[in-house]
Length: 265
Image 1 (cartoon, rainbow, N blue to C red):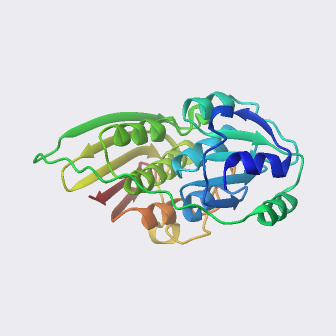
Image 2: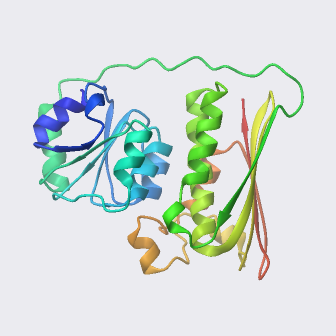
């Protein structure tokens, strides 16, 4: 169905993206946990959430969602509308709660349209053909997701297949949030070769005492404040592992952690 149909069904108010209401979606995903959205949400979806922060919109962007609907009449307060407009995401608000919204959409559903994916365009040169460097500051929640957004934009501009870009973006976003929540700062290197994309996130911080334990779904050392943002549910490293073809995590307590991800083209 189109986003316009969902708007009418929910009696929603458009906060950003009025010109995109005819966009078709294939799935609806309802959650307040952004790591779950990144782990299990599918592209060409619309997100129903009570998380009224920019992180909900950034998460939707990383996961290739087409729109976000805030439930219970919530409105964004941290610049999310501008982010949504810039990245072509429809942002709406409805007075219905999560359950009511799902029931109403399900009742109006008559089928979904198949959306053709763009053809992959793999670079033909040998060796590293693109190398970008970024930096992330710990505790900088105001700019959380900006490096991931830059990485995603770069890969889309050079013509990498959208399914691969989505996996890279999700992995980078989870890595970025880990740095912001748990480290002082990090250096990020993005390398593109004909056969692969490689991301390296080298942080300065407290390190991980038990990497194997940290890789288990549900294990977390996050604070209540961090969980209130929709993160810290213990899905960060598992999400990265799920989306990358090769993953290496090395850590030294009191020094920091290095996460290296590779995505085959």
